[in-house]
Image (tube, rainbow over all chains, first blue to last red; front, side, top):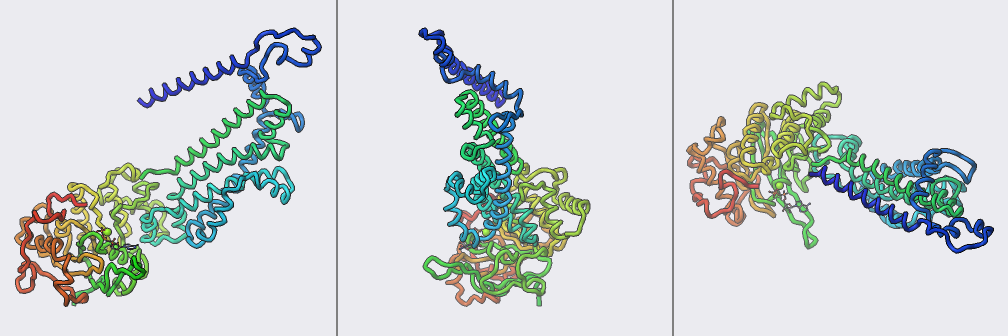
Length: 279
Length: 310
Ligand SMILES: Nc1ncnc2c1ncn2[C@@H]1O[C@H](COP(=O)(O)OP(=O)(O)OP(=O)(O)O)[C@@H](O)[C@H]1O
Ligand SMILES: [Mg+2]
């Protein structure tokens, strides 16, 4: 039953993809030779003008280019010409660093806030104000104080991924079922052991949900941040290829950004499932 | 006089009331239990039974008064007093063995894994869960979960077992089996047990003493009923005992009518000297003048058998 549903859904997905690629192909294919023009002018204008080819690349162009990239993902021909693997690697490393730093701060801090009603009330106004600030708004301040574009990007990732984790940790810790706490209390379990053996496992699904939201936001933000700071990374690659007017490369980058984002989300989803136990 | 293993001395519990004042769940409550006795508390919903149990467990502090266990005033929870929670309160991320082992390691911190496991296994076997050690709570039936709760409470070899309606969520059949098991275990290990129940038959089967509480707010302990049935009573032939109906009628009668207007009827009630009712012993009993209650007039779930009260 479910397997047949999955099979049918898979088939529909393939049909939809094929239809999309087909329409894309038809919409962007060459419309044959166009009005005669002087050969010199035609040379100048390129295929777009001479063969009625759309400026938007078709799926075959993108596929061919993608194949090229996939064969040499890690080449490095100077600052403006690096393999996609290298660019993605830079982005993932930045996201990873900023995100890990945020985990290291948000989870212990969230634990403290969640366990202390006083801290929770005292810090609430700050969190409420800081949370809705667009992470990119921090960029000038970061660039000014840190004076290093790469670290500034990491800082922006840090600041954008900290809030969902912090808030979810606080909520998860504060809403641990009273009866589980009471079990620990009747067994005279000390505060530290209680935190690790009852509160952490009980709050883990909520904390990991926060971490999953965070990684999604971090991956959204890194592209914009790298467009701003430049140098390396997939965001910079997109911007650079736009300046080179290589729409093909832009499309490839978009596709890869989507795939990496999906993978990051799936990894966190798997971790969430690992710590979630039905009652 | 009688040895007071547990002595609740004049406790009160007050909560901030609606109009700025305070509402007392109960005031000046006195209650004592000798060692090795099984006591049940019966009273209507909201009268403060759970509150008393939580205070006994040390999970909650009384607004006034003290609880003395084995000659010492309690302050907070203790591994000597195990609690069986109404909602079993198992940790869902731990297996059956893990849940029991958690209690065992909490009591004996220096034990190694093998010893903890062996000890936990003994109690899992005791409640008849052999073979389910590695299941998680979500894979267990309600009755099995409650058994794990019992195994967990027993595994720390407490001096006192506190049970808050432990079987109320179970079907009649499972409840009967678990009642048998709890009774056997308590008799074998000489536990002092304090149990809240809504089921009159459960109280009659299990308890040596039954505490009757009036309705809240301002609930009082109205009577202590001594169970006249022999210690070796069986669950199935309970109702054949000549004193069974007198006892049952007395309790039901209290719940149906006297619990509501107890304060008005007995203005001279002394909370420090709660009358002890001895059913079937003329001269000492008040049951004689209590008229038997026709079962139709009440919705008290304990009246219908098999009971399905919640
Ligand atoms: N945190 C609280 N704040 C205010 N009132 C409370 C609080 N906790 C309990 N109460 C009141 O105390 C009274 C006794 O509650 P308790 O849970 O002890 O009742 P109970 O006898 O165990 O009832 P039940 O049989 O339904 O479990 C109730 O009337 C309840 O409204
Ligand atoms: Mg209760």
